[in-house]
Length: 248
Image 1 (tube, rainbow, N blue to C red):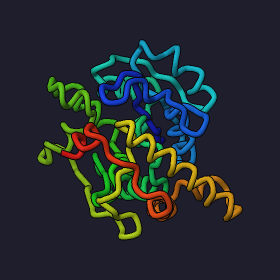
Image 2 (image 1 turned 60 degrees about the horizontal axis):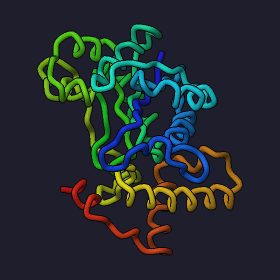
Image 3 (image 1 turned 180 degrees about the vertical axis):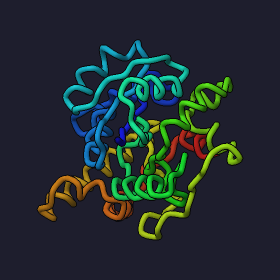
Image 4 (image 1 turned 90 degrees about the vertical axis):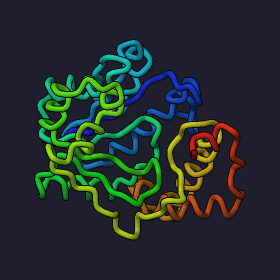
């Protein structure tokens, strides 16, 4: 069984309350769940800090996600709580600040990981904020038992990919159709959010014009093309000082 586990929280130093900011009428975290609903998976889970339960609970229920509260700072523990509760074989790890996940790339890397029996898999070369990580559940449980590092526990997977002697890692360069290292698709600052709103509108127009199902708007090639078109039409949204800080 494969479970999508989305980690999200409310506090953010650069963009406070960003998970609940309205992206074209719905909270950002809900837009992320909409995208992840297009993934081929058996189960979808929103793993959040316990203090976010009231805010996220109704949104998770509406999106068809199971809500798994856990420690605020120990995100690895949240994932392991979900694993022990639902017993998936593989986890597709996603984060609440990435509403433009390439669904086709996510499914491809997860298939590769499962076929190879990889403990950890993720594509290189794709835009920042467009990818997921495919992880073996037992590998995450081992990491939970063995690491006390705050970095490992906050970011979930570093213990795996910094210990190649312990885990089978699959980190290939993505197919060319999904490559664009200069493109930034995550939402970490107000500038990111403004760019996301423009891109979301462009993707809506693209999907409506094509007369296709909603999954079209979540394909990597479609997102890259729409992002380039949006920037060409309106010009890039100016970077703020804090945006530049994120790029350093």
